[in-house]
Length: 147
Image 1 (cartoon, helix red, strand yellow):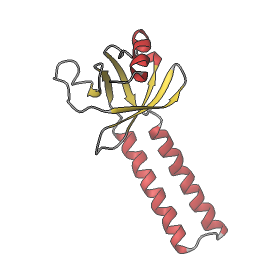
Image 2 (tube, rainbow, N blue to C red; image 1 turned 60 degrees about the horizontal axis):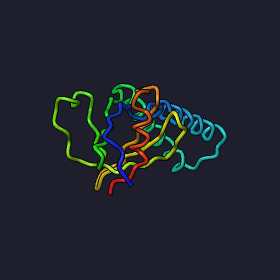
Image 3 (spheres, rainbow, N blue to C red; image 1 turned 120 degrees about the vertical axis):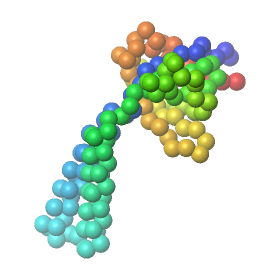
Image 4 (cartoon, rainbow, N blue to C red; image 1 turned 180 degrees about the vertical axis):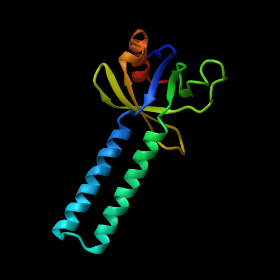
């Protein structure tokens, strides 16, 4: 089996993360208020919901305050690398390679994650509209396997 040729594709981080954090923050506040009003909570559950609401609200505020960056996913025929926009194409490539997993495939958009050993998983929502000319090559690279 032959590997896909090298390709670079622009991506942003999961854009709905801020909205989901805000939604969950609001839902946890509503559950907290409903629980207090209905008398459904013991003190420790009320404190747990309050802490959950605070953490979700803090995450939502931080994600709104500091927008998520733009990146390039780079496939060199063997490994995946991630470059920030200001790194590409002037700076030398970062030598960290990632394993790519496809979680959702809607043909014109993909939800993928990248992970490297001893690191957190990084999520990306990728759309054909970001760079339609490279979409086919990018999808070939996503589904290719290095030898």
